[in-house]
Length: 150
Image 1 (spheres, rainbow, N blue to C red):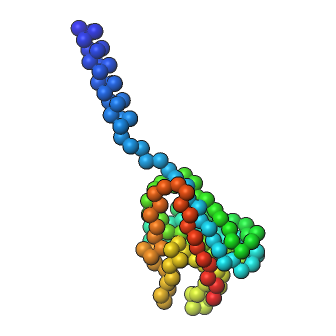
Image 2: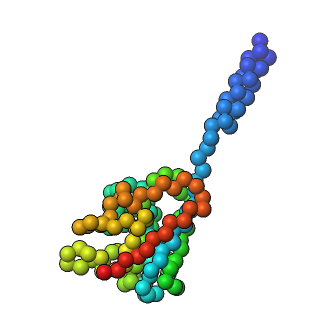
Image 3: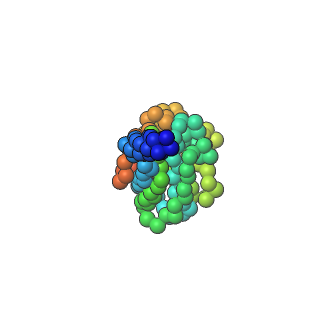
């Protein structure tokens, strides 16, 4: 009787292992952001990755990831690694004074260069998350952002 239960257990274990190997596993990916039209090499470019509209693009503390990149030329690149495939929006700004925030004037217009994915533009306010949203589903994706200065 023990032999019978042992054989049944082995068959069930083997079958469940086969099933678990057949389920496709979603692996994380990496993608590159290229930022162009940087007017000088003062400060850094801060690149922030948002997975939802809350805080986009102004409140960078709401981003799932933010990185500052030193400026050496009029363009920079940064690669986000180990990101789950999905919908994201990217904001980049020229933090000329290295205070880690987007400085604005009295009426709320950015004083430093700023740009978002899809090069979306705002109308009487910042660009909308939906206009900047991209579907990132595979490695080797490159997102190009053009900074705009007022």
